[in-house]
Amino acid sequence: MPIPFCLASASPARLKTLRSAGVDPRVQVSSVDEDAVVAQARERFGDLLAEDVALLLARAKCEDIAPLLENEGWEGVVLGCDSVLELDGHILGKPNDADDARERWQQMSGRTGVLHTGHWLIDTRADGGGATLGAVASTTVHFATLTQDEIDAYVGTGEPLNAAGAFTIDGIGGPYVTSIEGDHHNVVGVSLPLLRELLQELDIAWHTVRATS
Image (tube, rainbow, N blue to C red):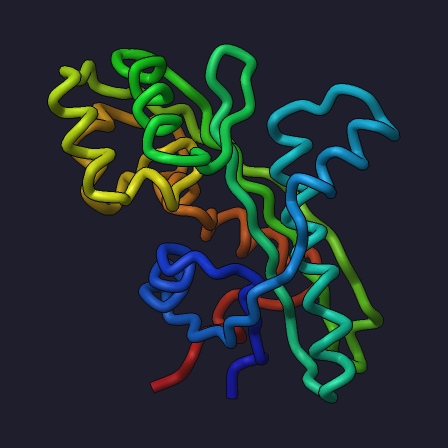
């Protein structure tokens, strides 16, 4: 039997990526107020880098869910993730509305950004000792130059409203990404190579969390 695994994220893209790699996690969506978490961190530490925001939110989601599962008697590994796009030093999460998404794409068109995804793990198993750790994967994304009609049509699909940075690489937005530098899984929302490395830090081999046939 594989080691029980929980994804503390509502992202269908992250779930699909994990399942495609043979991991069939339990999904438990956190109730973290992301804006409040970031605001509190900035009040305490000052300005945050984009990768700091991604890791901060990934950790918050993971730490929100792990105690709930422990109270149920569930033992396994919990993964929290969060992605942000860095463009010209600005940190961009999901757009607030369609107008925000259009403005984002007007800025992103023909430009290059960096997609940061924070990953945080907590081992809730009795023999895991509550081990916890995290890291960030970053992928450079080169965007195509879009016409206004293309931007309007893409925003009209609704997809950009549910994606960090207002784009996807594995969906309707795929044609608007000309190339990337780094792990493409990370742009989808979870870096499988980084996740494997983090599990190794917990003395958990990747194949032990895969569902067996």
